[in-house]
Length: 481
Ligand code: ADP
Image 1 (cartoon, rainbow, N blue to C red):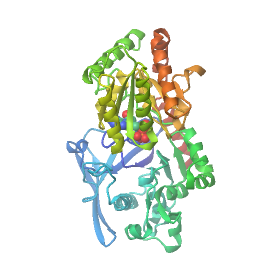
Image 2: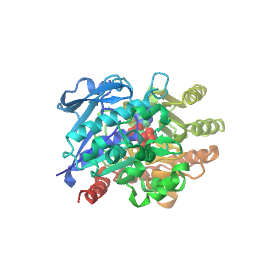
Image 3: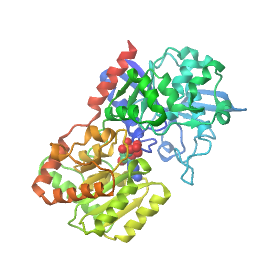
Image 4: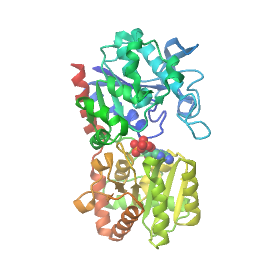
């Protein structure tokens, strides 16, 4: 069996802030059937999952960073908890915090450049002593984007020069850009003549560096790859230059973990895939959500789950819900998310203005998310861009019809019912476009026969990792031969 090491800042269930955590926590489990043993390494955070797990230290080291020495240990999970070999790196003072990315004020940690570089350096320090163990190093997003560069250009790590590295882009809008003179001293030794590779537009740009240095670039859907080439502001020309090593592979979902029949986060489970059992399942979970948030009955319930960031369009959604309800449209909405503080306020005001109609929870809450997927009739995703989007896949698996904008991975996975597909597509991403989508959902909900047929159709779709894992295996085999 060949070995691949996934290097990431998230891995479900240990540490998850979004879709990348889901992917890194699921894909490796689907690779052994393709003769690939995939392991994962992430930073060791001081968060709940780690507390009752047992780790064995397999490597200890130190490296210089700035004018200090950083110690670290690589620890392997020896208790249960992950379905594949799982490592974490303990970097005292840098990652032993109770949040993955954000400080208490909701902003990123101030020492992000140092933390990122330190973790990536620790990975390299470990890899040069274990370089024969991993045939491919697969890094995720800009946080790990310097590793393909370190492998190729750092004299200290030259043993890894010819090892293939692969970059997955889960979100190309975050780039890990650092001001040269603030960060240069944190880098391992690099020849002056090679420093230019790190530069894009006068700054160190971790994503651009990875795009230049990795052997293959994967985006998490085919449509998003095309969008990056066409419309990624200053990075578009770089994607165009590197196009021959770029490929989009649609994310899958972990159908064992996301199973309405056994989801451990749910109290009401699906008994079987028979139509009548779906009706019971949806009704029971909807009732729980309605009771908990004191929502009116007999209305379609439209859910939203996501980060309150420009990308996800929750601002547009709040305006459209307000306008729709003001114009007497009959629906309930439930919003689960957190992020931008102004938007959090806006959503709370909306909920206060429409008691019994708009429910909200400003939080990151995995258990509640599962109830929203199970209990809503529709899940709305007014994303301005969406590298893949997992919510629409989870919602369909739980019998919830997606209402989605026509971007990125949503384009690849949500076809409008008008065109024989399985959801409602928002073609114009503005207040009217969203209200139109909601109004179509209300109409569809009233046509019980058509609505139930649609639920039956979406729950039959297979978006499991099986298909996509074989595409990854094919990609790996290209570099293993
Ligand atoms: P992102 O851009 O945030 O990574 P994805 O659609 O790829 O978006 O993945 C989002 C993942 O994060 C899904 O598993 C979704 O259920 C989860 N998620 C997002 N926001 C929340 C929240 N507030 N509470 C619980 N889960 C959330």
